[in-house]
Amino acid sequence: MNATNYVRQDVFKSIDAKTGRPTYFDDKKPDTGKKASFCPSLWGGKDWPSPVSYTVDGKQYIAVASGWGVDAQFQQGLLSNLLPGWDKSIPEGGVIWAFAVE
Image (tube, rainbow, N blue to C red; front, side, top):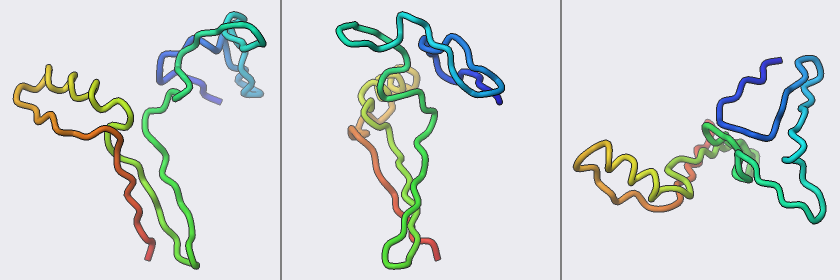
């Protein structure tokens, strides 16, 4: 098993290579009446959204999310600073593309 970080995290102390079970930092464990901050946030540490496959009336479809997601304005600001003349008209959210499999 490989458990290499691909985003910054401060929750897991280690991962058992044989069982895959994580060991947590004690101050990151949730409990009643206790506040715990952690990274990544509830949004998770994803590098790309996964596609979805589903069937309607016997026909298979694949749906894929694209776009900036919920952080479009921040990402646009970064690109605007790096690329002079960057068009700042990317909307919030994103797009779901659905394709029928023939």
